[in-house]
Image 1 (cartoon, rainbow, N blue to C red):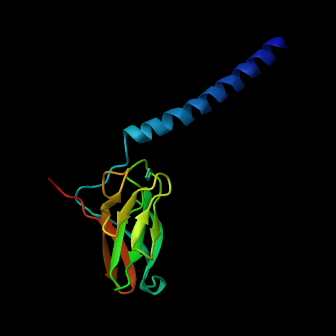
Image 2 (image 1 turned 135 degrees about the vertical axis):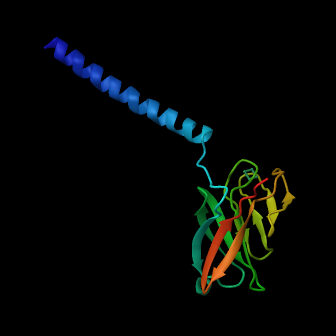
Image 3 (image 1 turned 90 degrees about the horizontal axis):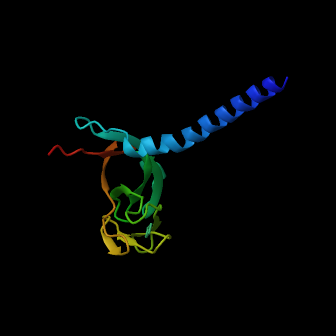
Length: 146
Ligand code: FES
């Protein structure tokens, strides 16, 4: 009877340690081996339609496993950028009144082209390619082959 209880507790403990190890090991592996992006084909996602994007508005979406933002400028042009702050990775917000992005975490500011206006971020927000097909808006990244 005592052996059965001991075996049961050992199995529960082993299962718990295995699950805990999975929680630790999986993120480390994901960090060390990021998802690959083909160098031949650009990655392209449908974001929204032109009907849903009023001038001077923004739509946040997921792209390449990170936050991204599509902006329609007052003149009707579209811009798409990564919304992941290059300082420590917080998601920036769009300030339509001044056409810039603001990071609430530490106060970095980026212009509509992703250029750093105010630190502590030192690197610009990556810019993506916007394309239209009818009224559908797509965002893609064009891989550069060096
Ligand atoms: S994470 Fe954006 S300013 Fe620090």
